[in-house]
Image 1 (cartoon, rainbow, N blue to C red):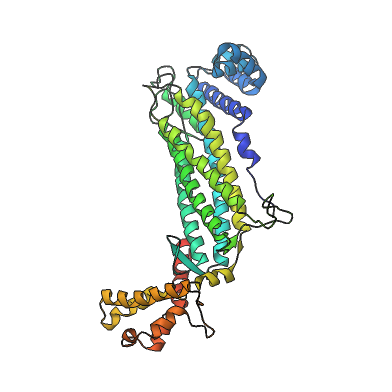
Image 2 (tube, helix red, strand yellow):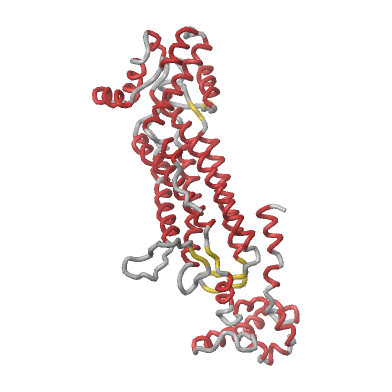
Length: 443
């Protein structure tokens, strides 16, 4: 399986060519709308739609003088037309063109990200079904807790990524708005119908109210959705990094033939991909604060947001696309070691069953406080035995904890040998896995 990388489509959506293509698309939609409203003749409309074009080199040349990118762009476009060029950008301000065009770019980029997330979900689901009943130890504070399955871990990841997907879909709807409301948003030079027609042609919705710009809370929601997604992806990457630690070694990244882990130590197999994902997720999250700070502009508009967005939008989307494809490939090819998971599950001599024993005693009339004391004193003995180097499980398959419990006369007054041993049945901990999977993945 070949590793996926950031798709060419995503990079292309944020190229100079794509930016000016989007600007031209907005300007041509306005020409069509003005024609429908009766300002522009069919003849002039057709000439503009057929001939309007630009050259990036020419825009750069003009901008050296104008110091204004939209004017440079419009001048280049006008050079491809005749007298009909007077109707290009008619009644519009720069942000009418720019913000509506950027909405198109973000919307299309969000569609690619949403597709990436759906691919990631599919990869997680496939592994979850494969390891639905693969026993492993659950940890809190990094310390062994109780038995779980690797499938349950993956189900949690899937459910969380699905919530991130819902946020992305909502953010896509929030950003899919355009504006052709003029310099101060008062529609003084163009009717509301123009904006409605332009947005309809472009597959956007008209902003109910705007000033000189589309309000930047919309952008902040997009970057926040990407950041929350990145946080969940980093959570997955960190888990994989932990599973690959030598003393844990429950899962690891695929290590291809000929791959090298260290220039000095030939034995090394490092979790480089998940470490890379962790770093990329940090970068994606770093774009949230500037996006939020862009919400507060002076009065009807300033351009302090512009320089920020030239970074965070292309970098945010391209980085997220790369990260998601890398993480998806990592999950698809993840090497999972059930035997090592079971070895680690047995590492603490049966202590993972302590709560099960604890909960049996109140049924027999023992107070919770006394029950806790009985179970804890036997558990603490196990820690001491392990520190002395005793085997967690003896030749008969009895764990240290089970041995201690069976020898506890106080406990034996309440529970028989068979009842104590029954508390050490792994099936008790997997009885609801099917029901949980039905909740997460559907029946």
